[in-house]
Amino acid sequence: MLKIASGAVFALTMTTAAVAQDTVTWQDDIQGWSVAIDRTIDNSCFIISGFEDDLFLRFQFNATQQNVQLIVASVHWDSVETGGDYDVEVAFGGLDAWTGVAKGHRWNEILPSLVLSVPIEDQQASHFMTEFTATETVSISHDGSEIATLALSGADEAIASMLDCQAAMSKVNDAKRSGDDPFAPKPDPI
Image (cartoon, rainbow, N blue to C red):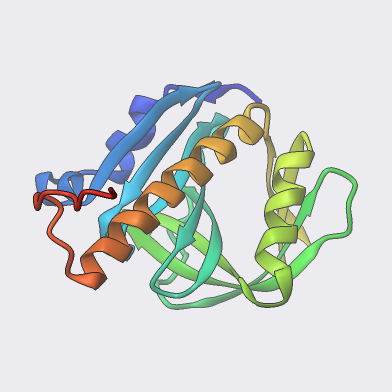
């Protein structure tokens, strides 16, 4: 499927100045994907892209919940209720589908979306990410009906950039937690 301009994606996901300050671009336009930092979830990094039929896909770390999240959204899903539970299946290419309960959410109070969280424990998040980067498409279904089939071209490069972003943000977060002064002179190692 053809991807729409990443600028339009950010226009829909950052509608106010306050929200824009909470999201910072790390790298833009990696084959139609953008990598950014979400300051509202402990400087967690994410990738995002827009697709035909006003569909959007965001994949992110969520440092506050210790998981990764696949978020699919559409301006046409008016009946999605914030906090509602939605049984979903996510199939990468021809691989076995992941099943779970996605939470309904509205980005910036306007963009209906489904958020599927995959825990870090037992390597689940790692396996999910590996399948995400190793396949060309993802199909998402709800109650047995397909709601999105999206091309993942360029996602492997975008995920690699997201991992670099997350490693840098983890260092920033660790420095904040340790109370280190980033402006203090470094000790002489000799």
